[in-house]
Amino acid sequence: MDSERAIADLIHDLSDMDDDVREAAKTELVAIGEPAIPQLVEALAENLWDVSDQASDVLAEIGEAAVPILMDELAIVERYHALCISDTLSRIGTPAIPALSEALQDLDEQLREYAVRAFSRMGVAAIEAIPVLIRALADPEEEVRTYSAYALANLGGAAKDAVPALIEALEDDSERVQHHVVYALEKIDTPEAKQALIALYP
Image 1 (cartoon, rainbow, N blue to C red):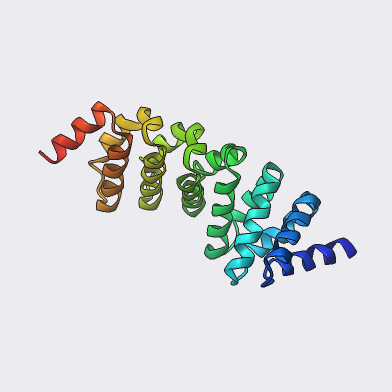
Image 2: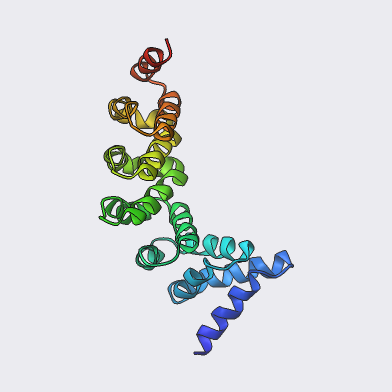
């Protein structure tokens, strides 16, 4: 109980006006590690952006150990909290990829959306997820297809293997998806991608 109270006090310090107090609290929470994870995940739902953002930073530094709890909560919490968890998983990066890849194939459409949103903010760390992102371009849900294209765009030339699937996705029924697919092809910028864009805008 005393340790839980100490963790709660440190999380409260994440909202302190003093930068030194906040940084000291973050350092202590990272040092505590796994025992602090449940309360830090709860703190992601805080309305105070500073608290949720700082808690996300701490969880990202704790890293892989936080992934299982984050994924469990991602499937059950309200949307705002889920989006904060998704952002945290993106900050964790590579260690979160296997769990996010599995979630991206789940039957729950919102869970798939949150997973692909994490990939879209992960940047180059998402390279290992390219195969699952390619499959997600054909997902039944518009949001999943949109964020899959955006995630591939953020990988630039490293996502060259996605070009054939992106070209097919130019025929998507959603104009929003089409817009993000065009952006992805522009960013990947291979000869095949350029040719597809020239054919689209002769």
